[in-house]
Image (cartoon, rainbow over all chains, first blue to last red; front, side):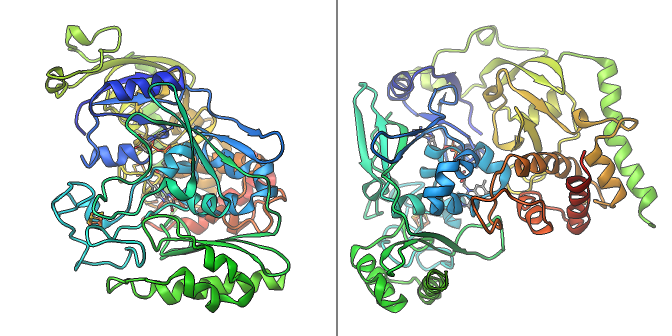
Length: 317
Length: 226
Ligand SMILES: Cc1cc2nc3c(=O)[nH]c(=O)nc-3n(C[C@H](O)[C@H](O)[C@H](O)COP(=O)(O)OP(=O)(O)OC[C@H]3O[C@@H](n4cnc5c(N)ncnc54)[C@H](O)[C@@H]3O)c2cc1C
Ligand code: SF4
Ligand code: FES
Ligand code: FES
């Protein structure tokens, strides 16, 4: 790990200002992703602003429906919240399908959204990687691509967004709330929060320098049955090869998003509209334009079959 | 049965080392610290000063470890695990992977189990930390330590401190109604079944494969109380 200076922020605006003011500064929340990457010198902040003391650790009802989840609410607390379990089951399910109990006790809502890819070449500092070292090339293209993206990738990067929680938040149409170093606030729809790689794979989200996530809001409950089906190499404690987040109503209508297949949680309007017509009808628009890299072609039939499983469970209920 | 003597031996050194340490009662600080780093946090580097930031930075932190107040002056990079092992000589918590992947470093911080390798010591100002040394002693074992011995919940013992800290916290999490990936009904109170134990303990890897005995030790305790 490279040496760094450290401070504890005492207000969201002060935290944002501290990061904006200091070249090479970063926030640290749970630390479970950034410290991992700092040990490998993939992240090399010169200054850390610890946001753990900010009073952003509550889940509040929004008047008129919906909830506001503080940026520092731990993954365990979010999955266990009575309102989330009852009205937003897909979110509880997605969280407990990820990482381990110890990690979920530390991981925060904001940190989880911002977790970086698990592309093996991103982690291997001996290899070129446009995300880690912009302009150096991409070792994954032509390399071992089993875990990598089948859709939404570019000629510069084929990494996936690895997380589970954000896939559920995408299906729920969450909004990310932020504060900027100048004190201004923004509300970013989750659909626009994570970015496709294009020719700047190092730019992964819509945040500006120093911008701090303060909360994630969920709209009023959707009803319906909630599913998060994750397929992975082990029964537990492994990242998704493919995951399906879905909310399905008794008449078969609903919404669906995929994890593990793209650089961001993957949702397509035309696929939602086809929900009543079976998994084949949904998979076609959802995966239209897919370009598997070779080793990962299995993800296309796997995604369709996982979708079929979820849709048949919804019917059986 | 043939493992019993081995098990007893494995448990003893790990616990008795704590006794030796507590008898010493030392508050550890680094012998040398650059004057600039003493006391208050150093200001963040700016511009040309950023170069100078390549030198290690020292800061102070206070926390309660196993019921004792501890004050340390540490390199900012020090993880909670290294603070416990290298600075407080509490070597019960183990370093397996140092990347959150194995659970050998699991400790209980303010009532919650965490991977101490993926947390900075500085992030724990004012925290209450419990390590395996704080759960019980050879003559006053924590019920979970006793259950691990009864059920042969280990072979080499390397993962065991992390397994036991994790197991104690898992039973609390079940009691608190925290759902898991294998809980069939998200809204019902989770039951302490064998499947629940296995899923909830998946963040603790055991190379010796003592998993089934660990799950049995936990189930016994969940059923008959601690
Ligand atoms: C072994 C292992 C297995 C895992 N398995 C899974 C899995 O199966 N599924 C899954 O989804 N995840 C998994 N994870 C990832 C885990 O979910 C993330 O590490 C965690 O959610 C990150 O949250 P954190 O609070 O610790 O973030 P940190 O590490 O503290 O921060 C991550 C990033 O977010 C930034 N940040 C933090 N807070 C804010 C804020 N408020 N505003 C702006 N920026 C901020 C930081 O600067 C940093 O860049 C795994 C991790 C490990 C180590
Ligand atoms: S796929 Fe992206 S993250 Fe992986 S090596 Fe290529 S550029 Fe880097
Ligand atoms: S040493 Fe911390 S999880 Fe392996
Ligand atoms: S007892 Fe040897 S690693 Fe678990």
